[in-house]
Length: 343
Ligand SMILES: Cc1ncc(COP(=O)(O)O)c(C=O)c1O
Image (cartoon, rainbow, N blue to C red; front, side, top):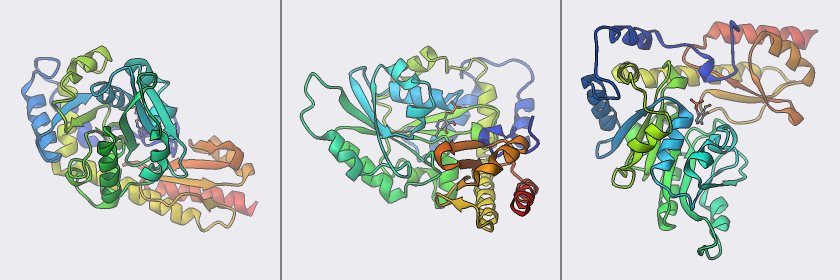
């Protein structure tokens, strides 16, 4: 156990409200697999949050949310365009390829963001029977670099995808952080912007586990529940995910947690910027800070705090904040950095 970690937002624990919601439903007996009244109500509440005329499903993990959402929309002969840095490309051990049998078509970006200019060259030429057929444009909001798409940019990408007979998928493991940073509601950022399917993460923002998939094209994703089962994402004691999401939606806990995590990252960046030896490499929009540190500082700091080296060649690290990052944690890290800077 590390007393303080900037390694990932899922190094955090469970928000106490979510924890007590789990205890509240831990009485008596209840139908399984989502056939319980709590899950039915929660599904309706999630659908309302995203503007209605959509279909919400609960799964266990973020990787599962991506796999199940994508699988519900494609065939093995399809291809999925994503940023090279996308979680589905880098950090899911090929889960999307294994389960969908479709091809990922990653595109290099400077900051994790795709744009029509970057994608268009990939679509050139005939795509006849010898080629995988592009079907999905997948983006992450916020991105793996902590950058954000504005609502306008999402609209542009959705229009672009639709004009090319593709669908827009949003990996929203950190959708809450994006909504908090952009100060827009979830409906505006997804449904109104033309997204076809999104995930709405919980685990990184205060839940023990649980992610939601929202399909705005239920007519296309109608087989999702079968893929959810096949992908081991149908949790039998579903009421324990639903109870967490109920607490997460109540009084906008999801938004408060995300705002706090984002604010902590801004504070951290501000404090790091006081050191001339440190270079912040990405503008801080959400809950991550990317920074280049002197090489000699990495080992002593990583002995005390958990965080990842993002780019070893440049000594670039990623520092993540979460709903339970405290100002004292940041003070602690900054004091350790001060000692290194003065030694
Ligand atoms: C952008 C993004 N998507 C999906 C996931 C997958 O989540 P999980 O680890 O719960 O499978 C992560 C986790 O780090 C992530 O950062």
